[in-house]
Structure formats: structure tokens, C-alpha cells
Length: 123
Image (tube, rainbow, N blue to C red; front, side, top):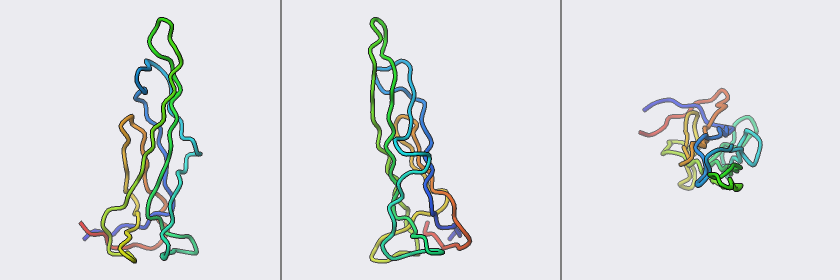
């Protein structure tokens, strides 16, 4: 079993694959760089709740193929779920540093900021 730090934040990383039928454009997280972390109902570290899930909505704004190059708007929701961990309560696992989820358009979520404690994660 590996030792992993618990995650206290989720980082959003925007993708580069256009939303169809766009040929150009850009993704941006609807929230700032830090995604929504869904807190664990029981576990805390330093007064901050550990996270049991992460969520971010990414908005795409771009242009379709010419002519006439119409605007294209798209949305991708990326949800980060934890792997099995030893630290759980009521069957709910927690996110640890390095947990990540890739969306189909290259948008990503990554669990970060482990603080000082560590926990053992299952394989």
C-alpha cells in the first residue's frame, strides 16, 4: 500500500480540443481555477473538510467552419471521484493528492494540496 496525502483542493485545467463543430475557440472553467470540492461529511484536517468528490463545468466559445463561421458554444462537466482508501466513514472514500479525471475535450481535474497528514490508500 502506498502513502498518499489527503486532498484539500481540486485544480481545474482547461482543455484544447474544440467542441464540435467548432474549428477554433477556447475552453474556460466556469468557476476560477479551483473547482468545487464536495466535502466529506465526517473527516477534517486542520479544520478543513476532506474532499469526497470534485466538480467543474467548462464552457467552450468558438467559431464553426466557414462559411459563415457561426459561433459555437459548448459545455463539459468533469466529475472527479476518489479511488478506494483506507480512510473512510459510512462507505465514502476521500480524494488524495494525484487523483485526477480527464474529460473528453482535454479538460481536467486534479486533486492537490495535501497538507501535512498522510493516509494509506488501497490499490
